[in-house]
Length: 365
Image (tube, rainbow, N blue to C red; front, side, top):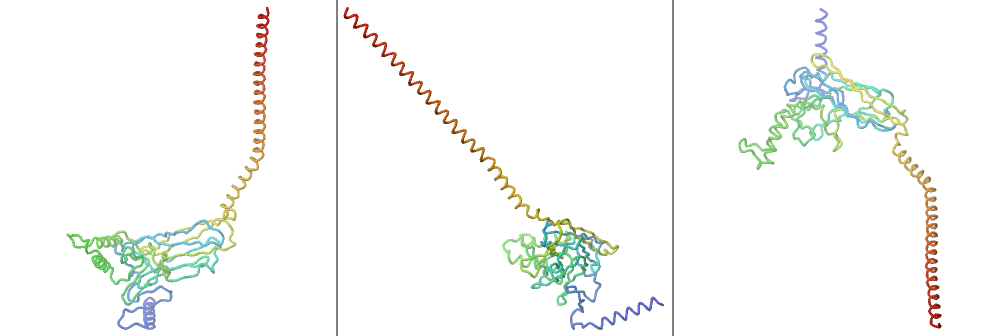
């Protein structure tokens, strides 16, 4: 009896809640939950909104976190940027998916730290960064974001297949039926490349490329949470969840880390995945290591100059000494040679005089 009473009570509670909402005439009945960008349809279970068309997409799912850091060696006052993705495939109750994060210490300047998540429509194209939320030292982020457009009956979640209008565009085109993509590919490509068609099929090469791209996305089970999409800032592309963490100016040097835990229900069991992102805050002497190295090099050069200077002076002095000594030696040798020549010439003159005197005496006799 108690069991039936609870069922009847829940039924009346459900009907009472339904009467509180204003339904639009001639459109699908929708309501908005006050979660910012998180919207849900009222006429179907939320878990049926997942759009995965690859083989075994309805089987038990498995998902892991992928987190990229802009830099893992920082200084006090720097900004740590983290790009958060989820990789996997298969059944998931996305309303159960949640992300818990926690810092190893109170290192963030919370007034200037925030994260972006959720979807937003930009010129009728899907982008990320629909909500900017303040960060805490630890917190919980629901990953049940849904973008819903009641006008075309279009919904998107983080875990849907990633198929976009053309390979070069990084925004998703809202479509009511996914198969319309192939028609658009072929129409657009045939018009632009009418001269480059296959004679057998009559389909342009570009259309074939688009078809292959579409099939590739399905066969390789690419989902939105594995991709980067545009944001409201023109030319900027962000991850499904992105963190901007401003470190305190007086944070102590050392190693720190952020812990991320993903929890979800895969249709059979509750699962979670834990990832730690480690980073280092440098002390001042590591921060200015390049300047210190240049100063050390300059000091070494000056030291060498001060040591080489006196040695160079000694070398110059010795060089002058040897030059003078060599020069004096040369002059002495030259003087000796001149003396020898003069003595030789004097001897020759003496012999000549003796010969002349002898010849004169002979004549007189």
